[in-house]
Amino acid sequence: MLGKIIILQLLSAFTLGQNCLSRDYNDGAVCVCNLNHCDIVPKPEKAKPFELLIYTSNKAGLRFHLEKTNFKNFGAFSNKIVIDSKSKYQTILGWGGAFTDATGINIASLEKSLQDKLVESYFSENGIEYSLCRVPIGGTDFSVRAYSYDDGKEDKNLTNFNLAEEDYKYKIPYIKKALDLTENKLKLFASAWTAPKWMKTDGQYAGLGGTLKKQMYQTWVDYFIKFFDSYKEQGIEFWGVTTGNEPSLAIAPTNQINNVGWGANEMGKWILSNLGPTVRNSAYSDIKIMILDDQRSFLPWYVDEVLKDNTIRKYVDGVAVHWYHNYWPLFWPASVLSITHSHFPEKFVLATEACNGVGEKSVILGSWERGEKYSYDIIKDLQNWVTGWIDWNMVLDLSGGPTYINNNVDAPIIVNVTEGEFYKQPMYYHLGHFSKFVPPNSVRIKTSGIANKNLLTVAFQRPDNATVLVILNKTEKVIPVSVVDPNRGVAQLKISARSIITIMYW
Image (cartoon, rainbow, N blue to C red; front, side, top):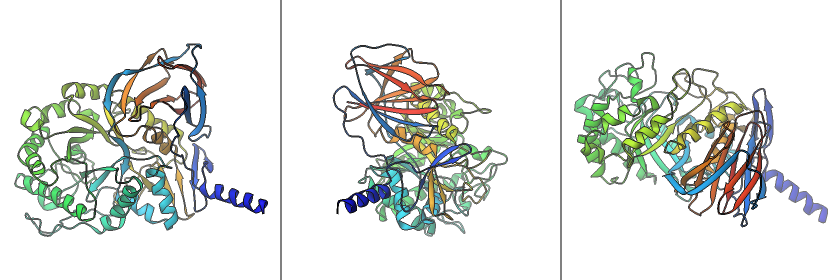
């Protein structure tokens, strides 16, 4: 009988799958999830006084590996990191990804129980606890076709407005699952890629110079309201909305991504006369309005131009930025985020889209370097007043799709439908080192000292008064550090090569 119990316990542990089922590729390892196994990371239990919880993921294969150590009242001070909880900065809004058509299509391709494991991996207490997600208004480049919610002839009164089949099959069901897993705490914001063709000057979903006809300015806002109404009927409400995805796409000569172009001056006029008053006088008056939803290279000048009028400024809550101009050859420094914050300190800045694989190999299974690019960008953003970080597609297939314009890229979770499994990429774990341990309403606090210049650090105070320190080591060397908290003492740690570490203590 005892032997049978032990066997059942072992089988239960295997099914629960707390540890990563690792599979190596040339660029690193993925964690495989199938019907029998999927790794989890349980919610941290409160540490004892003077105890630290240390979670490590690294290129060598550790994934959220938990160790414990203690503060002491003495120790060496090489590579010192000093925690200053009295110096406070921005409040965190959340972390997440986008409910694109491609994400839903790939989740739906799996067996039901595996679908559940995937959604739980992002949203449950045993996952990385996403808290803020983006929902496209209509189609994007990661759809299998181009569409809006009112295609056909001009329909200025929007009498033919209807959600698409994709909403009912690939967005709404998984949004509802995520809401259930988060006890309805998940915040959602919406972004539109294109207006119906009849609203646009070029009569196309995508193309050079496609802007909104001026006589359609109010109709475009009414379209947003119709979207909110339609999702509310499905039991889904929104925390925020952006002025539209990447208006600069309308001036990109080779662009195929559906878009609505906006100059800064015209966007300001549209917000002042249409978007602002309509939203604020609607049933959705509390929705956060975010401008730009485009690259850092538009900071601070585009935001300065849009918000130059105090009346416009009263309608706008935040600035949404993307990451695609952050790297060579279009490098744009993170300091422009701080400049924007200094110009408008009452407006939050939120990173609303990022992905690897643009203009290069789409999916690289096991790429630790791509995970590092995520955490490096997140830390640099956070050091410059950004309040959260939203990934692009949460789930793609082995080709980095589907995408009807062959704009294939990478994602933190990749589905292999043939084998009936999905893979958690290093990007998933790098994101999780923030989203899992830094919940909304955490506040960034100061770190200082003489830490090794090769380490990037950022620290927070959580709503439960826990302190969180994230450290990124991109070098091939183990680096010893001393974490110093004046109220607790000194903790000696060794940061493993090519690793990201999250430290928690109360």
